[in-house]
Image (cartoon, rainbow, N blue to C red):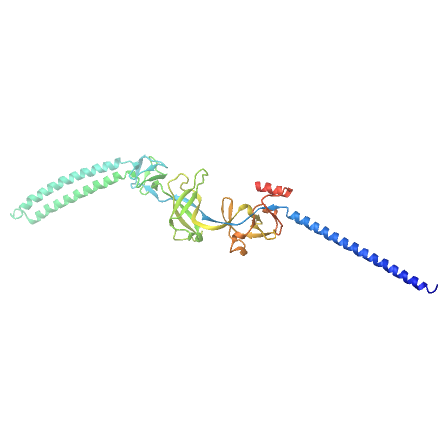
Length: 402
């Protein structure tokens, strides 16, 4: 029995070892199964997260190059092309009649007002009487001089007397000329009692009233020549060099019901105001009721067409005072890109600095068309024309409709 004991012990050891190996194999198998389940669960969780991020389906667009009109805006006053100040050339005479008022259209040579002419007519009558008297004196002096000149060589009259008769004739002639000048002066004064329009135009101001005394050089009326207005635009020194004579400008009337007025650049000021740093641009305006003299209005200058890369305004996100677009990458993730905007036309806007990696061909860029307010940098999106029926997408649809 002593020889059998080691054998039994050896069998028991091998049996125990076999059980341990089996347990180890079972444990290893269970560990692998658990790891596989965790990996599958993790993958399922990641897929669920990915699907949740990609649940927002958006439409994408590409920048479009269009030829847009280039212009810039300026402000300025509406003024008369030339405003004539009409006054009296007489002094101390009362205004007897006024024929026109502010806003009246007048023609060259039309009588605007009359000044009392009674005293001037009396002076004219006196001058004519003096003229008639001077004519008679001259005739008498001429006859005497002629008669005594015939006795010149007979010795019946001295040379001194002949000289006196000749002098009397010359004096009478001078007095006749003075009387004639007095008549002309009074006739001129009489014509000045009528205040005449110097040119065609419209009366812009009137200070003349019946009964008031007219004074030399005193303003009675103001006249806008040819009823011609101009827009004096205040333009910065930088923009001033963009303009040329003959360019068109659109002046916006303060009355919304009135159409814009099209004017033409007539002259560009040769100097810049050192205080404001603005230069004046004179724009001729057609006859219109849309603007009036003295208005301060806004207008735009047409600089011609210029190519522009454009996007719809819905593709822009305004955040913290800056403009952003969302560029779609190859992995369907979006990159938030800061951009500088330029001109606007209807629902589109010019993008001045598209990303540098697309300079050669800007049409290769894919940009989220709308709903950018729901996106952040790095989001995974789904590209399509239809938006999934999810609570978030419904909010996006409502936002787009608004």
